[in-house]
Length: 84
Image (tube, rainbow, N blue to C red):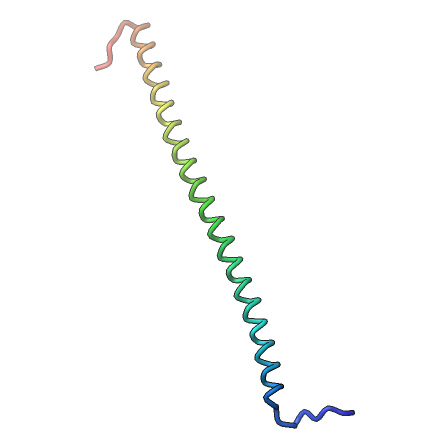
């Protein structure tokens, strides 16, 4: 039997169409929520990584300053000079 594509849609046809649209919408919404959740996790990890890197840089600067200060004191002691 040939399909008649010019026949008017019935309430059943419209319900089927709306159900399919609803399924697509739900799937799309879940996909968007998953992407958003993944982005939030990545952003949070980057935030903590940057905080850790910042802390490490501060510690390295403190260590370099202390090493520099010790070196100056050794040179002053060796040359018997005192920095002004």
